[in-house]
Length: 291
Figure 1 (cartoon, rainbow, N blue to C red):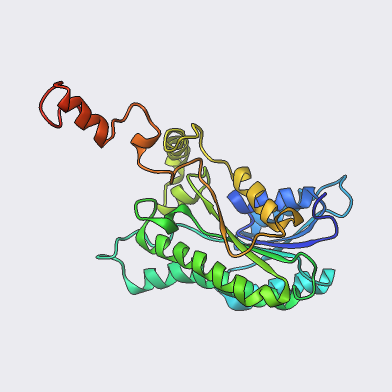
Figure 2: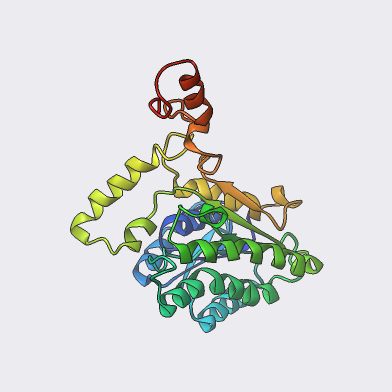
């Protein structure tokens, strides 16, 4: 019951990582304001409020994080009903514009930045006034492994998530005077709907597409299983808790080792450059044949 008596706000709460975080915070005693544009999913989530844990509850708030007035209303409601806010988890997001930099249009770029970066900035902006003076107040932002290099996502998504990392550091310095910690979490290959939603997968192919994601994710990193939403939710809960009271301005990478290095650094079936050269020098064949 690390969050007994605490008020937590989670955006993008109706599915995936957000949903897992809501359920975890509520199970440990928090009153959680679950915000999402998906009204049906949010209302269904609210029906799962803990029945036995004293104090834990889930309250749904419709919210489009691309509308700052929706974000302000969410934070105002949470504070008005509970007296303040202890944790804000800025998590809402999607894959964004899929085009590369040579094809993307301004509207696609702007929509992606609004959803993935601007919404985080204003989640902080409108949450902070209700967090000042709350002992242990904490903000967590969802970034991504895509923030640290190309190849993990479309370009606009990667740039926005890199912006979230820098925003996290800047906000941590700005808010230190108020005793508010700010950190980020960087998920890797997590089995959520973001992949199928990003390509507008038709309903009749959704199950097959999810199976492909699950199969590929088992082989994408050293930890030989796909990441689960609960893996990220537990990291977020740690960053929000008093156990992380000496942690601010940083990011927790939860990726099963995806970003450790090139595949040959951890997969013995894939030869690296030195193995290829050694095989050639030892006379196994012409250069490149061992690869």
